[in-house]
Image (cartoon, rainbow, N blue to C red):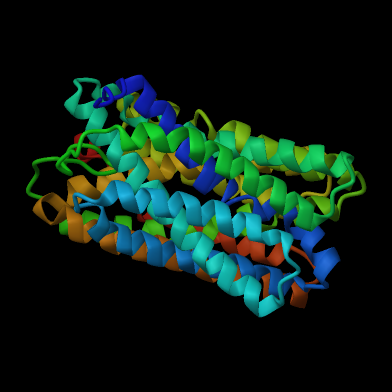
Length: 390
């Protein structure tokens, strides 16, 4: 007997769980575990940054591949593979791998998380749009922040239970598998939809503005570098404070809690005040957060920095991709490739240089100043809102 197709709400919940699994856990759980891995494996900050860079390089490669996969009828099968690969590479953290093996492991994890995010959200967006519920298209995105919060809760629970860092990777892997196990049956019940939309929703029918597009590509690349320094090392920054045991879980919890509602909130603000104006303000707020986290000397500055980061990095991504599709007009698909390449390159380079600068300078002040400066440059590069250009 043929099973009934899921409701749009069921599809949204499944999409949210995909982002919990591949993003909140598979991609970002490395941040709260980083100081513990340094202690257990004897890594320097530069080596820890290289592991993060490998993950972001994998994410870049996976995102570029997803552009072709998303247009294929078999994309749901790719989603199954990505979810399993993301959970498995997290679970494999239980083994005491060499430094080189960790580079490969996180590279694969990054590719799996990108494919899972792009294909999972594209399937949900297509389904809810064709079901007459396009307003639900952004509903899965809080899954990233929820996954970050879940990863903190899993890590803190296992810490109190006496787990080693390897055991904590295992617990996170099982959590990712559980989310995937709930989400996959829903996706496998979806009809074989013709790929009609993308992460940004229905493609705008516009002639395009190449000059604006070039500025958006550059700003997005700077965002990739600017946000990832704090997103990678904020828990390591917390360890340098006197109240480190209290701050380490709390600062990352704050990032996730603020990230969860940021995409729908950002869209509402953009509708009211203008897309570019809201993005420019978000770039500036994020730069302030990077400075507070990297240069401040007390707990409050670190927590405020985490809040600024969480409230902006996802919402800027959603808004700037939408703006780029509009600016690209009929060349939207090619523009998404350039945007992905720019952002992924910034993410890849950020931890690599930040880790080395932190070792060389003896702290995170210098890499945070660099990251904040690049974010402010990104804000300056954003074009004006069309309605305000007069």
